[in-house]
Structure formats: C-alpha cells, structure tokens
Length: 222
Image (cartoon, rainbow, N blue to C red; front, side, top):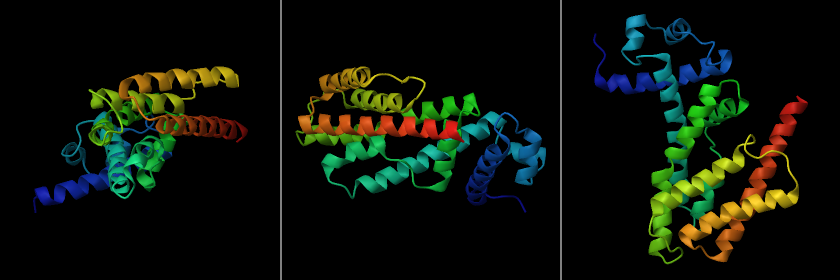
C-alpha cells in the first residue's frame, strides 16, 4: 500500500530522531549513508524519498532541535510577566531531551560542521520570536527602538558570543567587565532600556560566562 502524505510527516520525524541517535553514537562524520539506511530500515531508494543526502538529514535534525526549543520558549513566555520574557528567551536552556542532546553534541566539538550549523541556526531561528517580544516592549513604552528586528539580532549575537568559549579566552576580571560593558553599550544604544534591564542582562551574562568556563574546566578534568 503506498504511503500517504498523512503517514509521511510522522515517519520523517521518527527518522530524524533515529538519525540524531546515530550521530551521537558514531559521530556525524563517521556515519555513512549505509549506516543511516540500515538504522532507518529502508532501501536506498526509500531513504531518498525522505532525504536527498546526509547533509539534508543533519539540517533536518538541527532544525527540529532548534524549533522544539522555540516552541518551548513560546509556551513559557506567555506565562511570564512581560518584563521577564526577554531574559528568558536569551538565557534559558531547552528542557526537552532531543534538543538537549543536540546542544551537548554541538558543544562537544566532535564535529565542526555540526557545531557551526547549530550555532548558525541558534542565531537565526529565534529572531522572529525575539523581535515580537522587543516590539511588545516598544508598544508598552519600556524600550525606544525603531528597528526591533535588528535589536533582536544584536541581543542574540551578544548571548551567543558570551557562550562561545573560543571567543572569550581566560582573562582578568577587569578585562572581562570591559568586554561586557562594551556589549551592553551597543544594546543600550539600540533600544534605550531602563537601567534595571541593563543590570539584569549584565548579571545574566556574568552567570552565563561563569557557567561556560566551569563546564569547560569540568570537561578537562574528565
């Protein structure tokens, strides 16, 4: 019996989950098309009905992981007071297993391709949701900003920059504080936030910075 369009989407999602498990087990570069075909339980032709290449499978895995995180965020922020929503979007980790596994794998550095693609999607995909929240702040008179989408891009870049250990080498507290203040100055010039918001973002950046370096130190001890 031919597979219907109704069957296609659930089956494809199942294959995406299987692919992530295989990438975690073998590593993306070491996983072959034959490995994927066997894990999927499909013939070569059957597999190409869903995906045209291994690279397309990886893109589907990453898009699913980021989208699930975005769906969580959207569900979470409607429960929060307006003034707490932006920080939640910036500094909250995903609670679902699929996204958590994907993020840990990307951070491991095992595959530079995966790390790059996850970072790229992690910057681009949340921009519409972040823009919505910033526009709400503007509408409520909390921020003054003519370009909410550009402000969203900037704030996401700040958060991602702070979480990238390769961009934040070990340094003195004074130098670290100067870096943070320079980042916040760019943000301040874009949206003119109240001082309380600047202070909260500064505190979160410092906490995030400490967490990243503690994770790096722990991984070296293993």
